[in-house]
Length: 143
Image 1: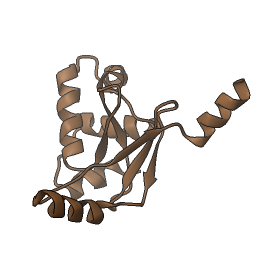
Image 2 (image 1 turned 135 degrees about the vertical axis):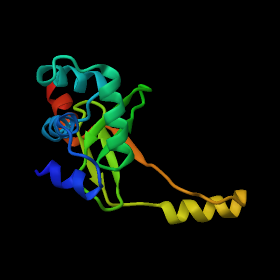
Image 3 (image 1 turned 90 degrees about the vertical axis):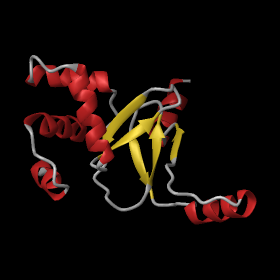
């Protein structure tokens, strides 16, 4: 995947650190914590600090290049999602994989908020957490 192209489309400079973060998340295929990204970044950049990793993760997430997982454990994780269309995610809390969900009930929620609260919704984030079918099958086999 050409991460240079993605960054240029969003008018972000393709720095070695940004490219490395995108490469790490792209090849991980699961969500990673900032500490996990930092550990891998230290293999490429010996003097990189954790604040630099956090700053770059937040900038990339703010531009929609990577996505945040706001986990039930109250920690923040990141993953690479190549889908640029509006969608949501199913997050397996066992194997840490993230799958796209095309279903969105935003219009219904927006109408309900307007009707019951007389308020206006400006945005939304939906992540569904659970155990994927592979992890469920593995647990059944162990029993």
